[in-house]
Amino acid sequence: MFARFRRLWGPRTAEETGGRRPAKQRPEKRAHNLFEAAAAYVSACAEDDQERIDEAATWVSPEALSFGVNELACRAVIALARERDESPRTVARTLLGLPTG
Image 1 (cartoon, one colour):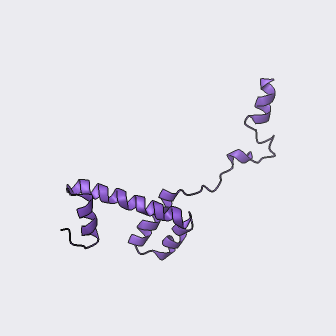
Image 2: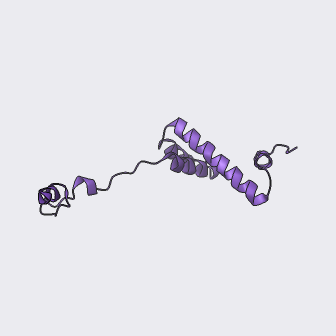
Image 3: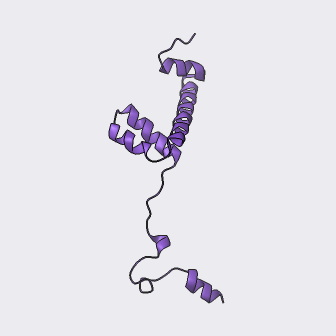
């Protein structure tokens, strides 16, 4: 009984598949997640690369991209605040050129 399952669900040889790999082993285009899209989008914006901006914007929905960019901004401000030993509020205002007081 187990031999039948192995034969049905187990790895296939090239001879059994006519020289093609089984579908589950074919490389598929991997979907991008929202954090990958946000990182690509923000880095492209920082480098003023419109082609990459446009490409990254197609990877996820606009809402997901917005969430990812917001999450990236929060993490970046927190990291800079720790590095500078300042509050996140001070760092964010400094980055935006706003008065800190």
